[in-house]
View 1 (cartoon, rainbow, N blue to C red):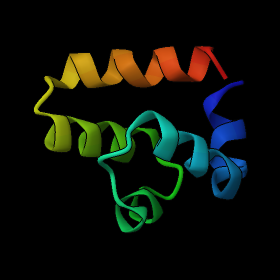
View 2 (view 1 turned 90 degrees about the horizontal axis):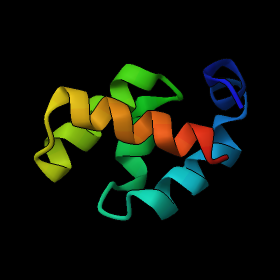
View 3 (view 1 turned 45 degrees about the vertical axis):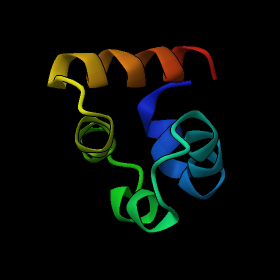
View 4 (view 1 turned 60 degrees about the horizontal axis):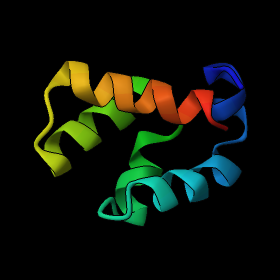
Length: 65
């Protein structure tokens, strides 16, 4: 799955993101609205990760979907 598909199906994929990153709230995921950089930023902030680590984590999640 590529990011355009994730963005286009955000209502479905945000549930999968919620499973992966349970500390993110529904409001935060809604705010991200399928934007990769927004999601990475939320993960970075909520989990105290570096920008690179958050980006790698999102890419790994994307690759496994």
